[in-house]
Length: 111
Length: 118
Image (tube, rainbow over the protein chains, first blue to last red):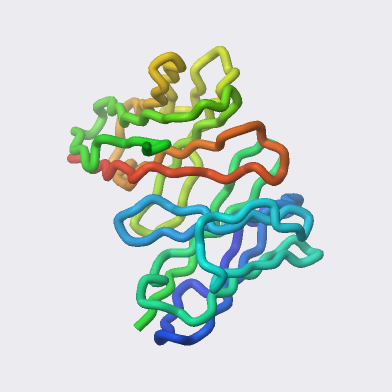
């Protein structure tokens, strides 16, 4: 079975731009979570979606938004990019066992 | 207060030796889950092992075991017979509350960088 997939792998943007990151969960998993990992730190929770509904939100500004589609894939959108948004963005899917399985991540660089 | 504390920023261990990575946690919720993840330089977070707060026995997965001491609020990862491929960042994480498809938020520690020396 395919694991969690994310696209793109790498992305370079400039301040003020908008970015969309994509994630497909493991087949059969209906819940997706997003995390931001700044260099040298542990991942920080951004959002969780289950059955297309937002179930949790971390301490991030409104510039961050997300949605989940009927096929359970998800998008993370970030508006008005700041230099501090440069990070590895990780997507995780959760199945019946409660364990979160992570994708390879999208490395975002904001110049 | 930090919910997850990993006090070892870096560790160097000889190949084939056992290694213990420390993790302490802080929660008032009686129901919680503890996870360990491995993050190689590629960036992907690889799930290693899970321990539920009501589990009576310490979790084991191959060469990985979790030394769960509930009263001390510690959940140390033990890697037996370390290998060169074990060199990576290791993160301890906690989910507070029961898992119910909407409550799987993980709080991570700052990680420990493990380097295995040949």
